[in-house]
Length: 192
Figure (cartoon, rainbow, N blue to C red):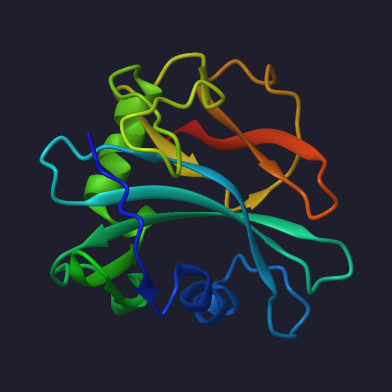
C-alpha cells in the first residue's frame, strides 16, 4: 500500500495543473487562466510500489459555470522514457521523496494498467489523502475490459446517474465550490 506523506511539494500539483491544463485539447475554458480547486479524487496502488497513482478532480472556477476535470497522474522518481513530451505535467520537489516527475496518467502505462485492473475488480480504490484506506465511494459497475475492449477516461466530468450504461464503468464523486456534491462516470470500457 502506498504511503501518503504529510509534506510539501514545490511547485504544488495545482500550480503545475494551472499551467498544463489550458494547453490540453479537451480543456473547455474560455481563454482566461484557470482558477483550480481540488474537488475530489482517489488513488490506486502500484503493485511494484514505484509509481504514485492519483486520480484528481479539480474544478475550474474561472469559467462562467464551474467545470470539473479528472486528471489522472503518475508520480515517478525518474523521467519516463518512450512517451510524448506533452505527457509530462511537470516536476516538483517533494519534501520526503525528492524530485518527482508528474505525468498525465492517461499516457502512463502503470496508471492505465491499474485503472484496467480496477475495472476488472483486481484493484481497490484508495482514499486520496489517507494511507492504507480504501475508498468505498469509488464504485465499478458492469464488467472490466477484456479482449477487443479498452478504457476511456472522461476528462470533463458531468454529474450523471451512476447506473447508466451496460458496459463497465467507474463512478466517483467530487464537490462543487458551493459545497454541493456530485457523482459521475470517470472512466468507461469502450471498444478498441
